[in-house]
Length: 239
Image: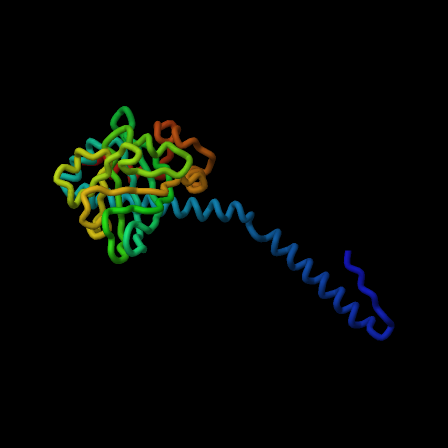
């Protein structure tokens, strides 16, 4: 509690201060009541960002499918991880970041709805200079898809029993568990093998996209259905 002492000579000053405090308090209360819940605002931003990732992912799929050999690879894929905008900012080995989304192949041959992730580093040999662009990981095995079912940070590399090959360099990309592709070939350098680390499932963005709390496995198993990603799923299945 704040107590204001006043004297006869300063009564007008103290009364003015009290009036100012009352006005400030009233204005703050009015602003607080008018502003949306910060949690709702964050959820709206996350939902908007997720929808933008899906929209941009459609363009990536269309570019990939314009290559007949890559299109054949996609028809056999067990999963597809798309990063609409990846930036490699470090000089030397690795470094960078982006946001990605994963779709899994369902038993009937269709594709699941997307789940969202944050991506740390994609390392491909000696990398000099900054590079950026869209990227994709074509998952050729169920083991590669299963790697994405973790709720904690994980990596995709030989250390966890997964081979990640560079599409623009490898002579037999289909042999890898994962094929790394980008329309900017400089993003992955000239190395045959690659490593992706610091991947984390984005609970906030995934829940915001669906407007409810969802289980990662339920989405990848096709138990969650929404029309928000129909354009992306159709881009993967249309002929």
